[in-house]
Length: 231
Image 1 (cartoon, rainbow, N blue to C red):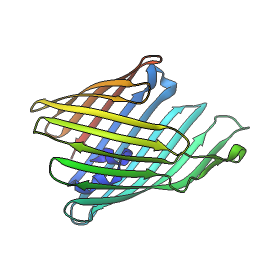
Image 2: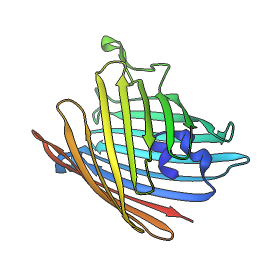
Image 3: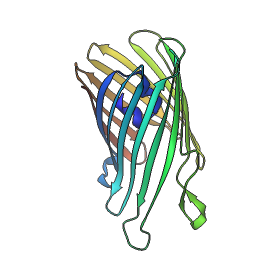
């Protein structure tokens, strides 16, 4: 769907028609640490899918922007691939530090082994574009790999390993339970020390609404909200 623009662009290849989505995450309840995203995508399984994503983190004294365009298509009945072009900009909010921008890419693949088991891989900024001359600072290069397994029609288990070139591995796990036709219950855990999360999803005829919260034992609660429209 349209949120593939913020996760793994290869996921768009499976969609039919037009999708639009928006989301907000406010880390620890601080508006200065909020992230807002908007994405639109259109596609079919024959010629592929295209998408546009816009993401903004921060406030007027420091912010990060990511404007991206992506294309994905089916490579076979079970494999999809995609490429995404990103315009990244970091703004430090004063004349001395100014801002820095660059163009980079991300690449993604998905493999549906069966209807119940799926693997995925994504790499962001493989060229390690430079952010600043001082200390040879770079925009982050991030590699993600994971799988989702559906043992039955009501339960889905997902695991992902995320590795930044300059950081530690972050292992994430989550479970989704389909309570009844429109309602989903989700919980998960990520990182070391572990942060827990809990969420609810509501799937209507044309819309999907998701709310969630992540809890850090030191810094507190981070609320999430997203809305996806199938038009």
